Length: 346
Ligand SMILES: Cc1ncc(C[n+]2csc(CCOP(=O)(O)OP(=O)(O)O)c2C)c(N)n1
Ligand code: SF4
Image 1 (cartoon, rainbow, N blue to C red):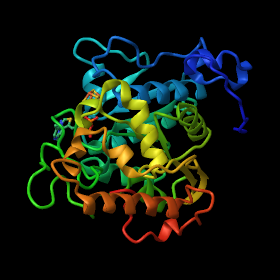
Image 2: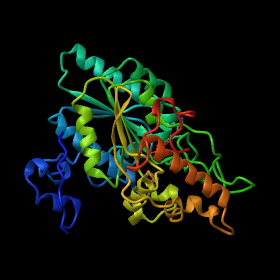
Image 3: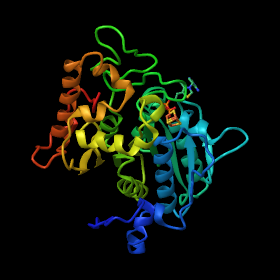
Image 4: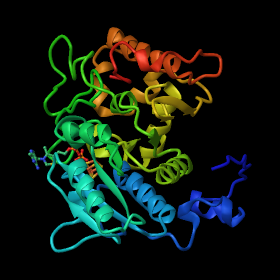
């Protein structure tokens, strides 16, 4: 896809604003023929980043495949809030797998379609960060290694939200969860553990890896479209704020996501066959406090006394992301493949 610079005047919402553009430049959501793949009536919390990310991602995948799409979905919030028996919000063929085997189920669907000669039908697997970085990790790595023809989408809300906000291996250092309480000398989640699935996916040298964020929905759509132009294993990791688990106001989801990018906490990138191909630059670098303060899961870093060491640690991790991925024009691009810990922002 070629990038076009568009100057937006105050045009209202993302959707309405796009209708001022030529049809070929409009976002998928601005297209009257969008599928509404994840329809209204589901039971996500107000302001759920995961619901927003999934709607945009799957509508974009539907458009890119001419509506020839099947989705496998791990157990987790997205599955639970969209399919309370006997109802469903999905307007596409959709299969609920176990918590840990979505990648394997998707691989099986792709294999069956290949045997039946139905290669025009494409397969998406999706799950939360717990289902992806922890329990489903083995199946996912196998899917990558075999280069199975599946796009796997991880909706990263940085904990096991569906079961009550337990820590996952995508939970950032110092974050309070139900299993990492804000008590003791080092309150919240420990630093130096966890994993970055985008970097691990890149290390598998699969055809396509990208990260995306719900404050840059046009970029998210473009990355899904790019992924569907490619055959083989593809991985998109979407940063999705969770008002309930993070302790944020439900009308702040987009703002929090934007702050994660503008501080360097969450790098927005793309890579093909292990090589970085796209980096969304930070427009104006902000201090990590701007991102941390609105979230109750980090409240213990500021009260009753500021935990300057922990805040400095988080700032250093954001600065490392900026250096490693060249997120600011002046910053040199680091050697991503040889990054020492493999962790992105933990
Ligand atoms: C084998 C197994 N263990 C535990 C569970 C319980 N369980 C269901 S959803 C879930 C958490 C999902 O977390 P995540 O994948 O991060 O998705 P989120 O709900 O945060 O979107 C857990 C622990 C299960 N269904 N199956
Ligand atoms: S707990 Fe979080 S991820 Fe789950 S529905 Fe609510 S806002 Fe969305």
